[in-house]
Length: 231
Image (cartoon, rainbow, N blue to C red; front, side, top):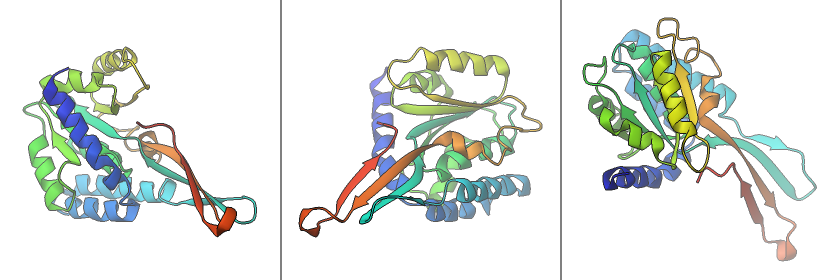
């Protein structure tokens, strides 16, 4: 593991909390602004993913609890994801992956091959001009993909392309130490049944609960917040 990879991962995770805490409406506004400069099909894909995120995971649910206590169930991003694709993966697939990762509150490494339909550096520039904070998205070279995917702090990899490459990525992630990483693959780049699913965004979130107790001694509120251990 190179020092450069460690530095990039540390920097990405340092921006994750603020991006994750921004909220779905704010992130959707930024991504919608980005979509305005994309071609029609890509723009529709961004809008589709944002709409599904607001519908399926954007709402905080109030759960029953004793008098004087509130219990909330909500979703949050998992951390830092890598988005990668084969050289012939369509724009809509790549855009769908990027949108799903970002709208759900994750930071992003974009790792696309030279000659791909989209440029990682150009995508980062577009997103930052649309309002995405610096450091939330980072373009990386494909020769860094293996080291990034092997880093135990990477929450997952989203890949669009051949089944054989998907299987190789699965074996690599399974061989890692530490927490299991999520592999989200789309191997039908024509019909996009995975990326085009209304519940695709659920693969990039974790559930959290927040309990606020206002019956503590002296009337001081206490807060307990539980997640799935993204760190």
